[in-house]
Image (cartoon, rainbow, N blue to C red):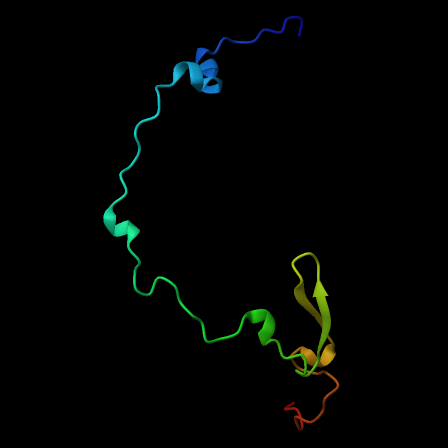
Length: 98
């Protein structure tokens, strides 16, 4: 490669300098009178608590580790009893068909 050349692109200049090439902005949209009025049901009051406050730290197998990070999100850990599934060491299901 012995020569490097850039191709001319006149639209690039128009894109990066709209103050020179673009028409002046229009007058904008007219706001309707209905948009200015309050709407019944516009704001809603919730009777439930936020998800962060719903947690049950006394739930079996769950351990609360406090709040984390700048947003103070709740965090926690699980022990083996919190996972569901078949325990291979449990023989309480009775004899196995063979």
